[in-house]
Image 1 (cartoon, rainbow, N blue to C red):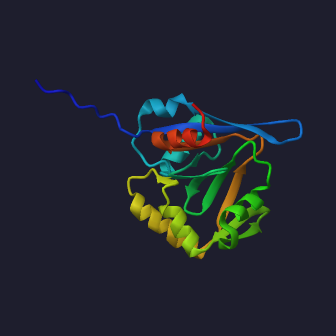
Image 2: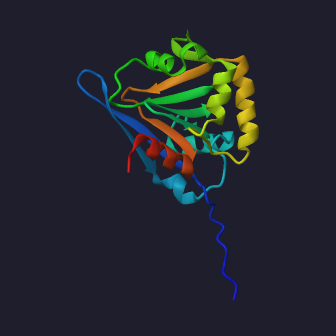
Image 3: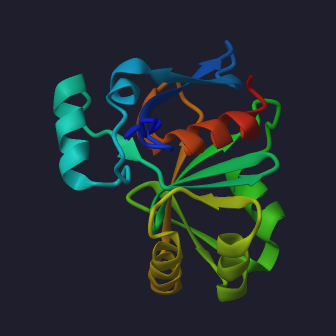
Amino acid sequence: MHESTSLTPMNPLVHITIGTHVNQENLLQSIVVHERSFIGELQLDSDPDNTALLIAVGDMLGVKQPLSACRISCLGKLIILWLDHNRWLILRSPDEHTSLEQLLVQMWGQDITLGEHDKKLTARLSEAALIHLLNSSNTQEFRTDSTDYRQASLEHLQQGEIQIQSVESADNYEILVRKSCADALLKCLNVS
């Protein structure tokens, strides 16, 4: 008798919403992450940055521009969701009231140069800092071609700036990720 094999992907695509609670002084109190059911139920086996899939999901869910993340870096008080090679969505620890710019400088010191483009924070990391970050055990990849993707990220970042978004307002972020990325994010946030 043969046991049937399941075609369910081991690490399916899921849709998460990241939101915040802010207090009366507009300071971050907590970060809330929850999985929206529809995409996860489809058990799709696709890298989350598939453009056609992002457009279709956005249309289905009425989300103008869903984001995707294929890499996460958990760095203590900062969590970086890599939206692509050179765009980061940064989540800070809710009990951390130091400015994001100060936290980045504390973390990387002279290996980071901060700037601004279109009123948004940008950064450049030294090559040594980039290589360390991309190869660190604190950074996890969630793509089928992770080695090639990591090399492409390094090449992009050696020549360009990192565009930084930060989860600090009352906005919600709709993001497609692999299930293991969502699990890693929850672990980094110490949410059970």
